[in-house]
Image (cartoon, rainbow, N blue to C red):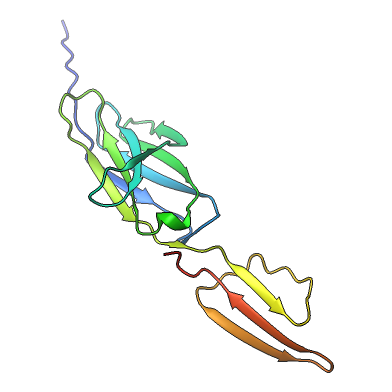
Length: 160
């Protein structure tokens, strides 16, 4: 006769991975959270808000469990807005089978930048600089035989 005993273990760690730092307002990002060490496999919950205040739950895009059942990976599709600057993003690992509320978390503070803009003054050109990305303001003066060009690049200033 065999006796099987299922031992529940709370999650042991959590880790947020944000690609493409810094985050720019108006774009979309897939943010990953890994939770490991839970038996049965943990569940990932996402929250965004300010430290010390109740956080708003965020819906995850996808959750999967590794073949050995040790790691749960969750993705959050996140579109930053200027008002998110300074808020926190938390991923929390939970074992729903356990009576206790022992959880693990990883939290990052959101650093949101404004969408890049390009201003071209005198004369109006049809150039497309949508993908131009810097984090400061600068000017470029350029002389040709008949025109004086003045370009202003205003890119990714912090939105706060």
